[in-house]
Image (tube, rainbow, N blue to C red; front, side, top):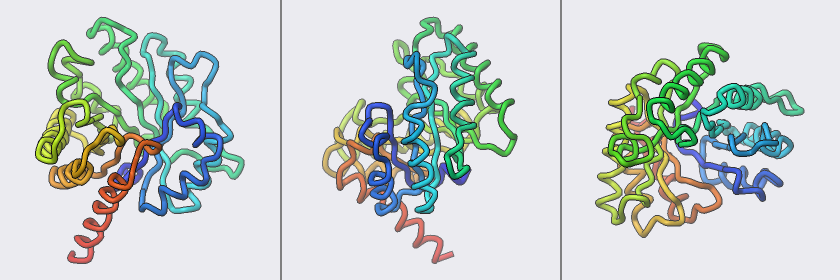
Length: 269
């Protein structure tokens, strides 16, 4: 679980400049007090790519570790070809840098709708999750990147009736894509929306929650701090914004407030 605690920064396949030269970006994250780098390793739509920019991934892992950070890889499966999805995820989990280092954990981005039938999609997603859990050591933490409350409960939506409880045995932490920017604006709204999502997902899946807020450059004044404050109030284990390249000073300052507040509480104890 340690990789999911505290603050995080996200890198995806649309950030080629980071993969090409990860060290400056990772150093910037570390300087801002970020605890974990979340970096995409693959996508079911990339037919000829098992691991995105393996050279850059290796540098990112080694740089992050040298700066005391953790690294979580993440992959977007389509669930239509579970064999291919599984192979690519295991390629990432087994990935070894020239210095013999690995990802500290791995998370599955559960949002693809390539399978239109919800029932069939649920069944395939659960089977893939079960197979992945069985393939890694029992103490190896797996994260489930899941839809927010609105997307997973109301039809029409991304994934109505999302089977949170059914996937609980296979994942150690839930990472809801609670993007307030898709739902509304204002500090009061963002605080309430974030608080509700942490509480909902934790109750639905009965797992600790790392809250993903965002989208970074769509947040308005005061909203980043409201999201971090709400995540803390709801007892999330960590918080982050999506994503690194879109993040501005307001997001970095909000994340820093999480770390400062947590450190103060530890001293009081």
